[in-house]
Image (cartoon, rainbow, N blue to C red; front, side, top):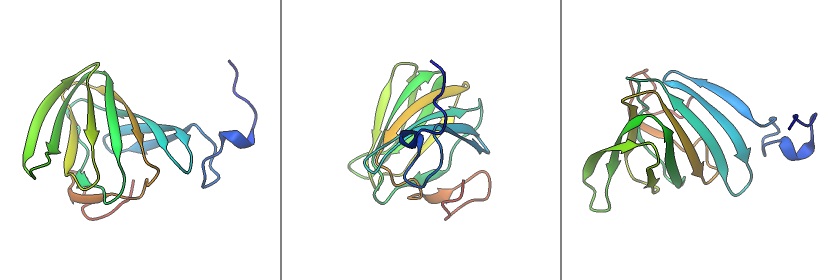
Length: 136
């Protein structure tokens, strides 16, 4: 299927054309769906790289590992931090307020579906000096 030329339905609420590629220090993400109700992304995390140890005040997300192996650090309902290894085909829910981090044991492709609050990131630790910010 060829891409439609600048169709209004291919735009995010902020006006950007979708899909949108965003380079990150740990790899990249492709935002392929974005409405007032939800966002769909594909995250690619390079082997040995990890995202911030972070939480979201409002954003609610699910991840599904398409390829690779991922170390998931995730706060449980009791407030304890748990670490699990996800293999391709496994999924996890990251509820609002839960501290979490994704670390690629092998280069990993993840599909993420979430509520649309993309700037809702509170970074507690970050390998790239972005603590406390919501910068890319």
